Every structure is written in structure tokens, then in C-alpha cells.
Length: 336
Image (cartoon, rainbow, N blue to C red; front, top):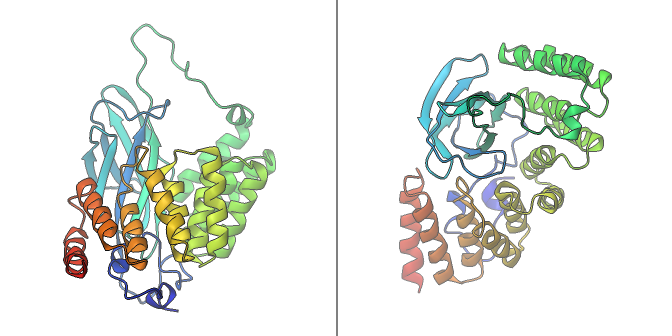
């Protein structure tokens, strides 16, 4: 099924071609052989341990999983760093600054036709001189992970960096054998399987992660993304709602929920969810306004659709889709 057929109904769509936040649901592979590689806008959200944006600019490097630099930029005052037109593939992030500890993120994948991707990275300020290192609190679940399991987990990261995905999976499974409640390890199995195009295996891994820890939000987010890709809209909505129940201010979970609601024809609900996004810091999620714009347009509320387009352009004026949005606005203005 072609995407335009999937979302048809309620009149001719004006903005639907602009708001594809998720990979094409008809696709069954992470990267489709024989197709033209796609590109994505990557947004990195930097947060302190208290979830506030860091006050000083931080250097953010985009790396291949093997550690080769691809691009670099600096964060804005709201803690956002943007990379445009990133080819589909597997990457890591290195975040560093004079006042912060250097962080190397876990590997992540940008899928085929995933036009917008967001990664969150927590940074820790360097302790003032004279203070003892290691004084930051650690979650109880992380404290319970045995050292052997941690070492196997780190080994899997290094193997994945080196392109040895199968070896990485074996190390993660070994870590789980040592510590069966290792939700993060199950989650990373899902990420590695996505990079291999095994979406069914990834779905099971994310489910296993949530069986190990029913409050592990990253697995809920990944499961919701995957469900949207596979057109399982009720399941995508369910995972997003579970994440929001635990983290009501999580803009990614809210965006996933709005997307699932829209594609189920729940236009009023989608608009309500987008309005919730706008009440919290949501840098990197300006495309949510295009969901609301499309929902308003579907119900003939062209004025509100225009307002959402204006909000999108205000929040993301340099978007590659800005000119397309402006063109769509001209059509909407003519309809008033």
C-alpha cells in the first residue's frame, strides 16, 4: 500500500507530503536494497541530569559506529543541535565541552525514509575543583547490574562499532544470561536487529526489554516507532501512551502519539496532543505542528492549519521543507 493511499480520506491532502516523521510503513526493511538512499534531519537534544538544557554551547560530533567523524556542530541555548540531510545508516554521537564530561552515545540507526530523527543525550557538568568524582546519583536498576554484565554490554557496543553486529548480539545475550532483568541490553538487541533489517526480531527484543523492566521508556519509544513503521497504529498509540504516563513531558512520546492518532483519523485527539507538546520544551519536534496542520485541514479548519504552519516556520525556519510549507500555505490562504 502506498502511503498516500493509507492516509487518504477527508478531502485532498495539502501537507501530508511534508510531515512524514516515520519511515514508509509499506517498507519491511531497515534499508531497502535497490532503492535510492534517503536522508534525514537529525536533532540532538542535550539535557542535564535535572532535564534542563545546558547553559553553555557544547560541541556535538556525529560519528560512524566505527568512530569516524561525519559532521560536527554546537548546541543552541535551548540545548538543541541539528544535523541536516544525514544519510540513512548507523551512527553515534560524541558530546564534549570545557565545562562538561565527554559523552559517547550508544549506537543508533536512521532508517530508510525516516525524514526526522531525534536523539537525547544527557550531559554531566564537571565537578568543581576539590570535589570528589562519582558523586552523581545512579538509578537503583543500574546499581543492580553486575560488573560482568556491564562489561559484556560495553563489549557489545565496541563490536557494533566495528561492524560486527552478530557478535554484538551474542555479547548482549551473554549479558542477559548474567543479569536476566537487563532491560537496556534487550533494548540494544532491538537496535542492532533494526540495523540488520530484522524488524520482527527487533519488535520481540523491545517487548522483552519491557518484560524485564515495565518502566523502561526508551524501549517504549522504540516499540512505538516500530509499530508505526509496520502500520500497527493501535499498538503504536498504546506504547506512546505508556511512555507518556511515566514521562508526561516527553515530546518524542507525545509526537509519536499524535502521529498514531492522526493516521487513525482521530484528528481532534491529534490536535489536542500537539497542543500538549507546545506547552513543554520541544526543540527538534517542530514537525508536530504539521501533524496538527494536516488534521485541521482534514476537517476544513484552514485558518488553524495556517496557524500551525506559521508555528512550524517560527520554530524551524531553516527546515529543508520550509519552502514546501510556504507553498502549502498559499493554497490554504486561497481557500479561505
